[in-house]
Structure formats: C-alpha cells, structure tokens
Amino acid sequence: MVQTIKKEEGEVLLLECGDIFPHQISDVQTEPDCKEDTISENSESEVIARILVNGMNQMGYTAMAPGPFDFSLGLEFLEKISSEFTFPLITSNLVYKKNGVSFGKKYLIKKIGNINVGIIGIMAVDSFKVLPITQQPMELEIIPPEQALADLLPEVKQQADAIILLSQCSYEETNLLLKSLKEINFAIVSGNIPEQEQSFERIVLAKNLYGTTLGCLNLFPSPENQFTIKSKTILLDKSIPKDEIIHKMIIKEIVNRRDREVEKQAKALWRLSPQEYLEYLQKQQTDIKGQKK
Image (cartoon, rainbow, N blue to C red; front, side, top):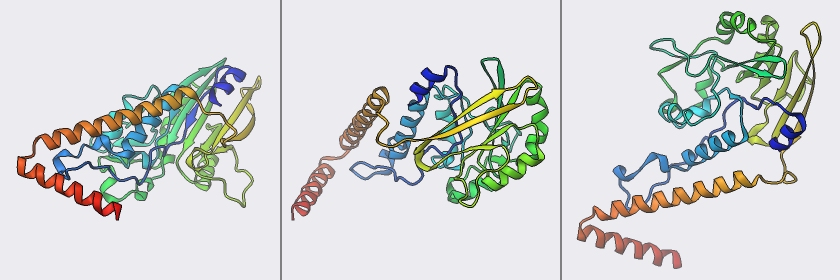
C-alpha cells in the first residue's frame, strides 16, 4: 500500500507517532533452564521489534516519535536498535537527565517538492507511568511539551515552511498545545479520536491501534504560505495484498531466531556433566509421556 501511494503521489513523508514495539510478550527460554543461558535477544518481543524496524526501513519511513512502550524492552535495547533505523527518532522534549542532551533528534527538516517541512515530536510528562517501574527509563527526563516547544519552535520556523507535530499527548492535550503555539500547522496524534468530537483545530490525523489504518494527508500551499489540507484514512484489512519483500523478511527472521535457539540449547547441553545430561534426558522423556496421556 505504501509503495502504491508513493507511485501515485511521488515524494511523500512517512511518519509514525510511536508505540510500535510489543508490550507484554514474555521472554522465551530454552532447556535446560539456566539463567546464564537466557539470551535476551532471543525473546519474542525483541525479535518482533527487529522485524518492525526492518519493515519500516524497507518502506522508507521519514521519521518516528517514540512512545513509552518503545522503551518497554529497555533503554539500552532502544539505544542499540535505533542505530539500525534508516530514519531518525524525533524527541523534542525527551532528554538525558545527566546532561540535558536530547535522546533523539530534536527536530527534522525535510524538503518535499518546494516545501520545507519541519517535523517535531513530543511525549506527555507522565508518559512512562504506563510502564512497570522496572521498565521505566530512569536516565531520561520528559520536559513539559509547551516549555520545550516554546524554546524550539523559533529555530524550526526559520527553516520550515510548514511544521508537523507528532504527539504522544492525548487528543485534548494536543489541541490545547496547538492553541498556544500557532507556529505548528498540523498535528498527528497517537490516540484515537474521541467519539463525541468531530475534529479539533489543526489536528488532522489520529493513529489507530495495532496498525489497522494508514492516514494520508495532502498539503496544498498558497502564495501566502498557508496550507489547505485533504486527509483520508485507509483501512488496512485483508483486502490489502501482502508485500512479498516484507513477508520474506519476516520468514527469514523467524528462521534465524529458531537457529539461534537451537545453537543456544546445544551450548547449554555441552556444558552438562554426564549425570546432569542423563537427568535432562529422563525429564524430557517424562514430559513426553505426560503429554501423550
């Protein structure tokens, strides 16, 4: 679908509001059960995360503003895997506590046709509270969005004809932010549109859960550097044909994961003493008999 849109429209911005990684999938451990043999990169969650990153790279994403669940696999994991992204993480109000340095890029300027588009991304101050305390990145600090953007927007405005906000704040919070920060032309929100609301000022798209929709936005500049818009939402149901390149990539990753698990189990068994290996085989046979009953 993305490639079809690119063929029809030419240059496009492919943007993501975050929370792409799986939330609650347990690590897979192989037998024999031994902590030192449990390799985190073999967890189902991390395998899925890598598949998603590779898929987004393949589709040619422009930028992503991370959400709190993207940190659920650990800050170290996100720092490491972000080096594999072919596009930047935009974190306009997320910084390291120790030095105030931005976690990702504060903003991105992308030229599309004759238009310079500024892309900024924010998180709500309490975003990490949705994570268990053990998963919260204590090394990071979320600056209040209005404070961070008030300092940042003059710099972005000097370089951009239009500014798009990728917001992890609620629909209502984002609308209030837009009312006080007129430099922002449009916002894309990570949450769903409230049923009682038709539209808020300059909020043009909302991301549905689980990647079930694709929002499309067309910007039409006027001589006064104002913009009119046309937006639509495409339902990504079974009528959308699968992408063969992405499909093959998923299969390859699953096979690689299986091979890593087999190798890990073999190494664990190799370290067992003869008596421990015999006990392991007896346990396996007992388990098989139990399953047959």
